[in-house]
Length: 208
Image (tube, rainbow, N blue to C red; front, side, top):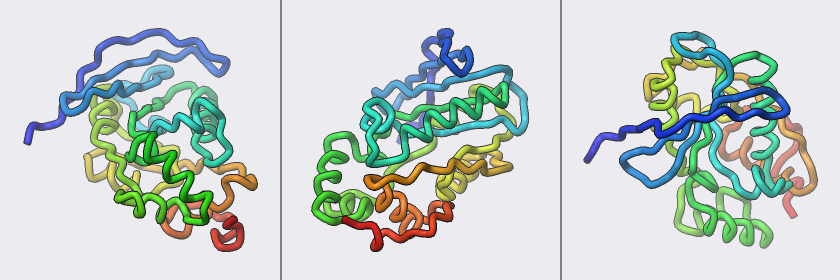
């Protein structure tokens, strides 16, 4: 099998309310997707760089859906990086924990019938989480980052990046705002996907 490679195609200045970033667009040789890295400040040859590896969520990131905490995590990551004065936000095109938007919306319908987010994926013939972080690791290596402080609640993401030779020296929590729409979803991530949050709720207690 051909080895994964990435190619930085273009970079552009992106001024935002939080800070002025540089946006790098990458292509890989194994898919046709456009993966992105939003960079603030100097990160090459730097240690303890604040990093968020974020997987695309159209409904949360763009539409502001309350069904998940993805959009909030994206906004919080930009804010934290801006406050730190330097960092990297990697935006991977793997919608719906890797199952794509079509099946994510089908999974939403199953969740409305009472299945949790894990069982909905399984019923559609997917794994609970099909995301891959190899492109993210290559982007960090392309940027010359030595070690990272990772904005995440997901221990599997930390483990996978370490397996890909990324030095993760610290986990920086991203605390979600709980609402009626996302409470069961977030509780399921804690109970069944081992996300590191202390919510004091259970998915059974809030499942509709």
